[in-house]
Length: 283
Image: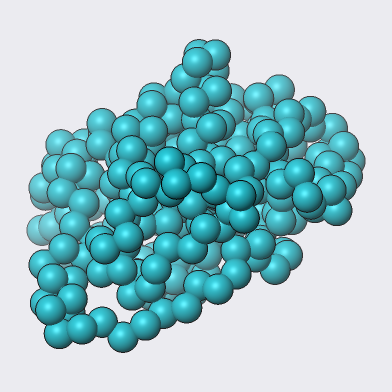
């Protein structure tokens, strides 16, 4: 079975029990990882967050809970790299799992095509038209058509049109358990349940050396031509209230607004990698 890590704060045994019971019912062995508590951070632990750039990206200050969350995920990625683990499932302790997770994990072909496979979906920011997906599969259209294939591209645009964010789906993968994975850019945010490869963990560690965004966006900025994907029907949901309070947005100054226009969401390395991976004619 796939190596599974559960990130859990020492002061939240209730959440540990919440996910532990689910995993035991599904027959999934796991290792608990003690999360970094945002209430107990040192100055050294805070220094890798770029607060000025974070404010431009998110219109707010990064709170200590977010920093602790980022350090916790980094600790798991470091374990993956140190122990040379090919693929791992990473869970947060507020996740609700569906039974179909077992069939997904039972066949490594379901996830070994990807460096990052998000098993959750943050709607409505990331959403997908399931009818359009099924139509493309029926028509055997598994690869995004080139820009001059107008009629074929209609269905692909329909897939993506329900999402608030702008993204592109490049390939559809029919998995052995009857589910469909969408290889895409940008991959959905939300880090409560995902599978990451060894290479993915290495590149996410590099991308998060200095952070100016929440950790669940690190795959948007990770170079190295990582193959990223999500499931059409998610297998996990964030079902409990967040343990990260006080995320309050503020109004940017005129100077900050000008700076934000030039820097927000600029992840050039990832964009270049996407062109190399799929070709500019499929953008």
